[in-house]
Image: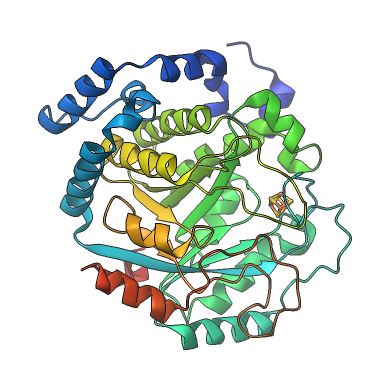
Length: 387
Ligand code: SF4
């Protein structure tokens, strides 16, 4: 592949260099063209061969044809999950530290053009949030989230946030703007254990339409960010697509290819996937592609059958009944008691939320539901002393 030195200097190398070998339209055609016999072949192989499935096999399992095999897929997903994770659900909580953002994602209430008063927490406020979260439950996994505004929430700010949160939690993950490898590495020295980033959609052309401005408008920069995390030795990488932008089957097929690519190159890293469905936000954006509960369940089973080790996470975007039903069928981690506005735990609602939470149960109620299903809530799945 011919390389452009100027572009390479800015966007680096990685999965963005190879993703175009797969045509989006052909990927969808292949998925939609899968037949009963293909589904039976893949399920048979998953049950008996012991060989990991390929992304092509995964595509068969998310096909409309595989929609008729939900029962055997659910049973297999449950079995593989229990073999690898036991009967546990790991709990985490997001803490929004800033809703300032230089990007203009058309589907997000935090987008730069939305005129509202932005909030970026001071360290005293971060401390208050940590204390309020600890009062809600014995959380040890904290997800620190901010909009993308490097001048306000750049590396020095994030370092301070990590150091402030560290005494309260064992495991700190960030979901912020993509960075250079050296910056990720620097944050690991301040206690960062993991990074979550959503490509939103893998459809290169459509991506530009949804992300018209700011650093996020650069598809390659964002996509190659996962390679930079791997190069920096980030312990756990969380990835996913925002379901509702483009055809969900196309996006998750590309996600499966992306995961396999990363696992081969950065094999020391642990991975998690999340399939957030679009929720109402201040932007008023309407999803283009709807994925219903049955299809999301099929996707979850398919991903577990495809990869027995990946952590599959459901957030409070999903409804309580649906989260409860999926607890024993492939999901391994969940958020609980979430607020998606900065300062939301220690103060009454003042700042704008990123999206409306659907499961508004308290952590206590969520843990009771987990126990009622015969599972154990796990508050700490990684100890910082291992870092
Ligand atoms: S999705 Fe993230 S990057 Fe985009 S506008 Fe919202 S906060 Fe900013």
